[in-house]
Length: 279
Image (cartoon, rainbow, N blue to C red):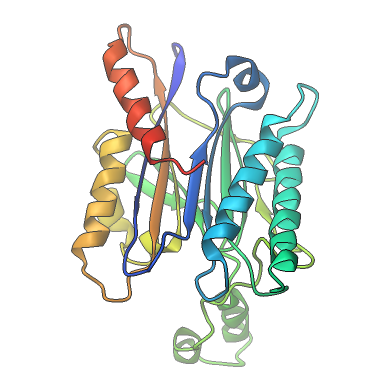
């Protein structure tokens, strides 16, 4: 295997919401000193529309998390730094709630993925997701923190039926989110995940996967990272759902560097991504 590179892509749509409550960002692809020991980072945060200050919550969580990760030292463990960033983000959103006198009424999801050398690390709170696309298959790597998980346990114990679980009005309610008094539920990989050449990581809010099933998502994956992101958003918009939530996707492609990469092409890729970023 030759020299590996990471190519990003991203896109958003407003849906039928009055404002964009999703935030996303990438670490600096030109900060080679940080990349050497901290890797490349992508983050998606989805401010909770049912609560107050969703946009402010997601932006605060994103900015706090990214700043925390930029402060990583060479001796710091990547999983530990991810958790530290989450706890700092949780304190920042909780502080926002105190300042606005809305304690318990401000929150956001957050999912973060790090590629360091050929290893993947992630951490998430809420129901924004991380997927792996490999060999034409799409696999969800994160676990949703929703009430549906508890309902499924009740189904397994025979307490309720599958129909009752699927029709429960609170099945999508979050059981963990950034902004809680105590952040108890965090999903992260206990062991580094080995990446293969050609792997693609997709981070997204529920406005995307809640509208498109996996087959529709896979149908867009043969394009470049940026074209895939654009196609996914175009498909969401084409659904014309009157209740469409904000939708966001951030992509990291793990590829072998071609022998000759036109500089203008790389510049265009980076310009398109950072133009869309809210960091």
